Amino acid sequence: MATGRGTPSAARNWPFLAGFVAVERRLGERAQAAGRLPAFAYEFLRFGVKQGWACLFGGLICALLIGTHLFYPADAPLSRYDFLTLAAILIQVALLALGMETWEEAKVIALYHVVGTAMEIFKTGVGSWIYPEASLLRIMGVPLFTGFMYASIGSYIARVWRLFDFRFTRHPPLMFTLPLAGAIYLNFFSHHYVADMRAMLFIATGVLFGGTVVHFKVWHVYRQMPLLLGFVLVAGFIWLAENIGTASRVWLYPNQAAGWSPVSAAKLGSWFLLMIVSYVLVTLVSRPEPCPEAVPTRPADPGAEAAIS
Image 1 (cartoon, one colour):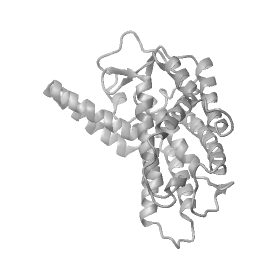
Image 2 (cartoon, one colour):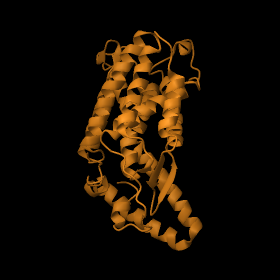
Image 3 (cartoon, helix red, strand yellow):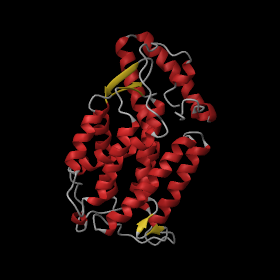
Image 4 (tube, one colour):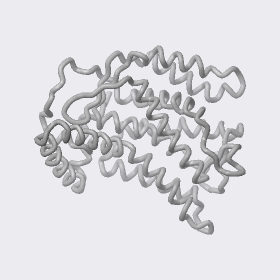
């Protein structure tokens, strides 16, 4: 399966980024020559830049939610929701055209778009949340841009995987993770009618991924962290993005109809489980590779180690 490593860097296809990479490389060389503390500060900055680049799709979607809430004309001939749908499509097309996203990643994101939209149709049907504004581009009451909000999670995972060159220790095989993801997705529907299996799904996730370590390259060497911790951290950021979505009144929970209030922290569990579904979908394209026993301390090609690739 394709992993995305053979795909040309976006920096090699976009002159603006190519210039940025050249400046960034010189900055890294100066930081390394200045000693351990400046080198650490630079690597920390580099980590943030890579994370921000991985969040590009989701960040642009959040910016659109806020911007349209504050400035979109109420009497515009095109509804706010329809504008968001068209803007999300243009962003996706631009990412592919500029080489910032691979077609393999786009396929997974498209699949997640379908998975997310199906869940939105069901959840709004049972009254879990509502979309209060009118629009033309919708399916059974669900605006089409909502699928892009789910897809932004898949986009982040696919992009961060490639940018940090993920490798793994003790990663569970797909024959176990795929049924887990399927059970989690099914439970989002079935718990409205039968017993909620969430506790057992948390336990199963802990058993499968409890010993998994993700190795990621920020600069010259691989760092590592428990993969479960990574899931928790990303779920937290998704929860923050959900608060942005409800504060900008794109969708509302029943308790927010009379006035906005923060989304319950209990939703963190739901986002954690949804992270597992997203992650497993990405592994269908980017298969987990083991961490090499010996990793180089210096990159063979400085241009391949650009902060944005």
